Amino acid sequence: MFDKRGFAYYNNTRVIARCTMRFSVRSIINTPGGALPFAFSMDLSDLDFGGSCPIAEPVEVTGSVRNRLDVLELSLQAKTTFHCVCDRCAKPFLREKAVDWQCVLATEKQNEDNDDIVLLEDGEFVDAEDLARTAFLLEMDTKVLCSQDCKGLCPRCGADLNLGPCSCKKELDPRMAILATLLENDPNE
Image (cartoon, rainbow, N blue to C red; front, side, top):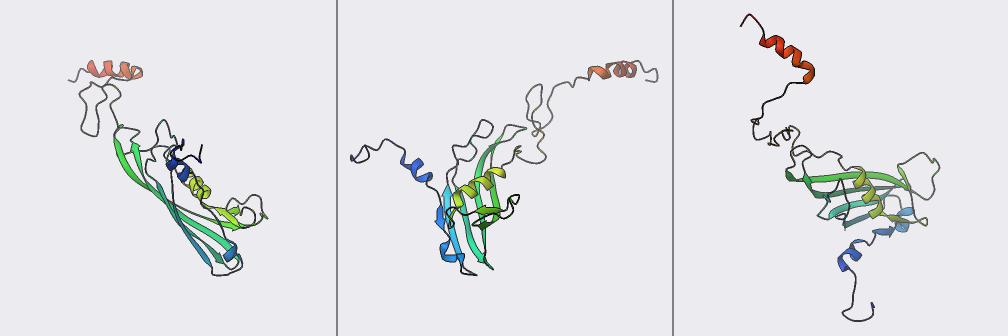
């Protein structure tokens, strides 16, 4: 199937996007002060968050692995633009998201409880895409608002309260109804 010209029955874009950013750090393991910079894009458009896929644009990742006094430190930044819908007023909007992450790379863990240490694969390889993906997903917001002071929608008529008050008559809490009758019967009025 793949050796016949013009008969590629798979999505080339998805196949290329699924390639991992796995590289060897052998050249700097024994070189104090050595560094390996990296940069790549991740496609997270198929990830579902609450019934939507907010990561429609590629996630751009930049970083480096540095040997500081025989300790390999990986630092990276992943950033993209989210296509969000406000959880209060249901208005669509765009939001920039950037995640910074650092860890120490090691060939073996001496302390099993330390989550800041990532083991090298086969003693020399690091999968930067897997680390960036995990760091990015852990920093996802569970509630997305168009602004911190978003008033949301009226629960009765559905009017956007950010544009102004709605015309609905506010109902009293049934537990407070007896107090309302006392106010209506006030003889001082």
